[in-house]
Length: 332
Image (tube, rainbow, N blue to C red; front, side):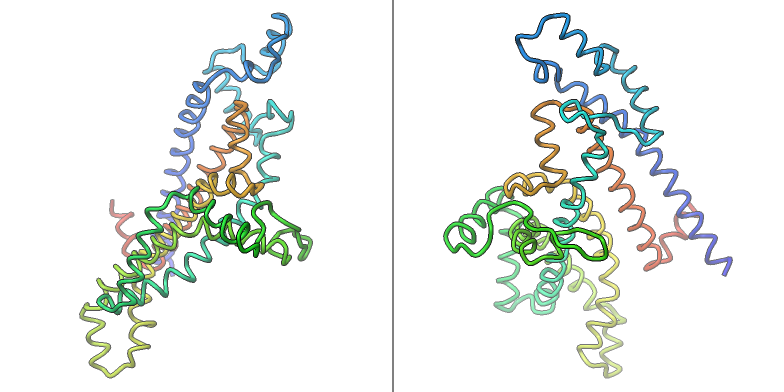
């Protein structure tokens, strides 16, 4: 037992140390980048304000200090869990983001579920029958998911299903339901009706990615010796596919799915804007327009932390599926 726990412990500790280093570097890059995009006072203060009022506002917001001084203040507050106060709302930035986070997580989870439920079966079909009409049609359709702009897809979905057919609402989060004290649009029919279009729009690119990855993994695995041996033993095609082949293609799938979950959360901005979905992406767009630095920095830090956490979980799952990964990490 100890021989098994030691490699995993070393593996996790090394990944945690790497994650802390990445987060430290990202705080510098994010803060410096946001500092360079403009002066929020030009937007927040009325043009008719006197010079004294302008200087007082600058001092109140802490913008009279050099950027590196502002960074050290920000870093000290960050270590205490304080990501600053919004210039516009005069509320803690982390509070504003946490209020919007459930909506974004709902959208991301629904989009990934759609991608997996549709993408894996279609990818397996295309991989097992690559020369059939269905297989070629699936791969041709996946090209559209990669090629069409996300905002254009969203507008077409709204025009067809909301405007022309009138089946689904065009935007908003809808009515929230409650389950075990948790409020979510997932717990009401009206919430689901509002979720379907934005989740589908966000899932189209990921579905195409899952289809192509699954197809490539199937074609790479199907002709390996252990699969041929399983067939030679007389195992049914269903057992060969679902027990022997599917288990091995899950390693790259777990990696890509984990990484793509982070990108879905981070890049849901366009979908949330098109469908007026009240998530973090919509908030960050509004904050950029008014140069609300604390909210922008807090959003980027949270997204980076999400990516780091997801990557850590993916690494652990990967090492469980393939022990050679953590053993190689120890030898390195």
